[in-house]
Image 1: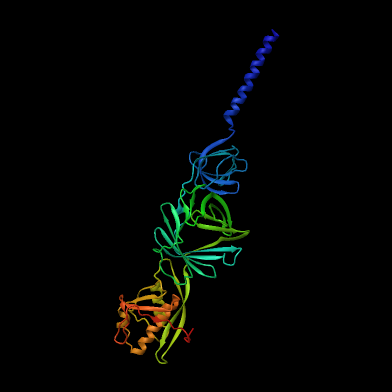
Image 2: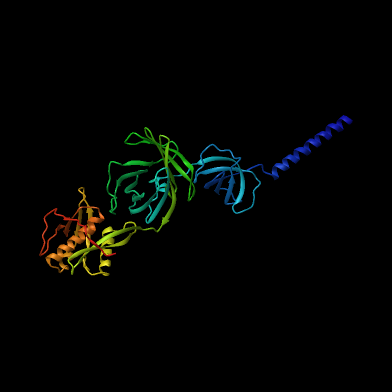
Amino acid sequence: MNQFIQRKSFRYVAFYFMLIILLASCTKQDTITFSAEIETISENNILVKTIDYENFDVASVDLKEAEYDFELSEGQIVDITILPEIRESDPIQAAGVKLVLTKDAERNVADYFPIRDNVKYVYEGKGNEFASYEVYTDYTSDTKIQQMVSNGGTQIARVYERKGGKLSRVMSRGEVYYRENLLNQRDDSEEVLLMEPLEKGTTWALEDGRQRTITGISTEVKSPMGTYRAIEVITEGADNTNVDYYAKDIGLVKTIFQSGGMEVSSTLKSIENNSSRVQTIQFYFPDVEKGEIFDKSKEVEYSTNDSTSQILEDAYKGIANEISGVVLSTNAAIKSMTVDEDNKVRLDLNSAFVSEMNAGAEYESMILQCIANTIGNYYNSEGVIITVEGKPYESGHIKMEEGESVRVKTEGILDKN
């Protein structure tokens, strides 16, 4: 009898404990799992936007103890498992347990090398006096951008093109101190800088034998502007290595060159929006009474895609209103100006330049010398071929042959600044 009671009591006790466990499991979760998109990444923490979870829309997830086997990147879709102890804040704070990647982020070249007008990038350098430089946007199209790079020692014009899932530098020209639209020019320096798919392991060979590889898609890069998650691209040469970092919506944020124990780096310091490029130009004018030529300097500003010839024409006329001596009359206009392979400038003017001049032979010669000095000096050229409506210059006093140029003469000019 006592044994029967003991067995029965034991069954009741066992059932009681099982009920307690069952009820506990129904009222308290060990973990919570939901799908979300990673919006930002910081050290041991991610900010996510939930996809299929109703209790909250955004969460800050601590990853110190979390398990995952992939490289985190903004835009990834992940299944996140967190502990149920959620700290109320804005956004809510949670401790991550596990992350599973369900869909990788969609990355394209345009996101990591944006084409933007009227912007100036400033980079600070280490390891070389020319590692610090500034970058201006001179010209843009839907797929191309022309930048002017100034490092204190020289100015370099570079053209980049986004096409077919690739970012390529298609032209690079040093010692360019003038501003001219070179978007449609290419040279033998062309090389691919980025190539889709933008994922770890993508590799391509360059014409000179070097190999370029994407080695990271969310590499942490620190700069004076803050910390970025960037695509890391390593270029291996015979005796040197170059590492470039591209951040989403920014572009190049850092580059490191290493060779024989030497390291030179350039890191993004600031971005200036609504920025214009400024040049100081020497404009030359005739002094009618003295029969001499004098010069006057003026700062001119260019916005992206501005016509250089129009800016210089307006500045020329503006100075003439302040002094005596006119080179460009009211209706005179610069139709085009370019520099050829022989470093001679070809300057085309409209017919009003001649018809409104109203000058004798000597004065006309001074006017031609003034405009040749101004435009030739701007291009650092020794001669300027002047045409009118596309034909060799001709007036009642002066007639030029095809290809004939006016030699730039700036020695002994009176400075009236």
